[in-house]
Image 1 (cartoon, rainbow, N blue to C red):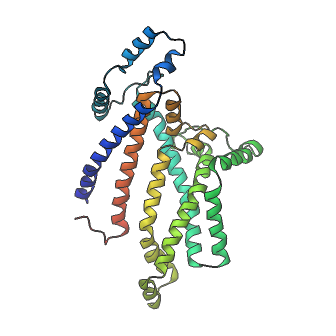
Image 2 (cartoon, one colour):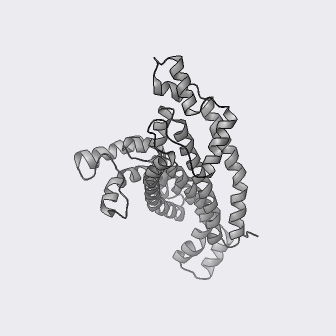
Image 3 (cartoon, rainbow, N blue to C red):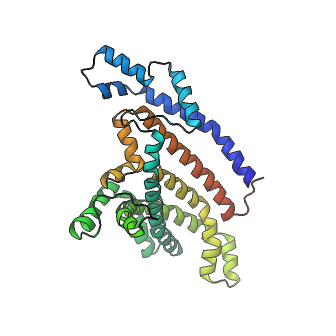
Length: 315
């Protein structure tokens, strides 16, 4: 298993390198630059030239990219043009909040989606199946920003149970305050992702329930709970784990709309702020961290496969 994980990480190094080149090329292809945002429209040519030299933007693009890449490999992502703080410190401030929100949203999605999928798959074609399938379609169709606004109106404005603006409170600092701040954005994202989880898991369960081993298990007298819980559900989790991993990586990468609705201090809002101010080092650092998160989650999903399905060999 260790050898397989190391091989996967080595295989992903070229992907990260090509992606970093793409990030750099994409940023430089965008018209405009940070100099105009800093100095304003009335800056003189001498001021523009001095600021360009100060930021190191007068060097060749290849030199700038190589300098940034070598520094990033050493753990230095540069300094924000506007705040003058290190990019790594800015990301470190926002990343724990995004991870906490992402994990809470996945938990809500699993708590809703898994029971819906199991109940629906055990009674295909029934009124209950059609009702739960309708719920999945509704959860996918409702815009997250609209649902978030409705939740704020209900729980923050009318009932006044929860704050309308969600801050970041670490769970180890105050679990109760953490729940009060994260429950609304997590519920907003969790309801949406529960529709995805329910659809994928239901399709896998229906396919597995028609397999020969299920009929054999039932003929041996196994209880339906054991057939579904110990055999069917475990085999149906293989494609489902991939979806869970991708959604987790997507949430940790930043849920811009939801974070904007709840003014949540996550990585997504930081990236949007960096783009609006053309803060090149911060944009590059945020995208690079998001890319590494996706890579890490993909490797973790492959590792989890071994525990779900022992038939998979990694030799």
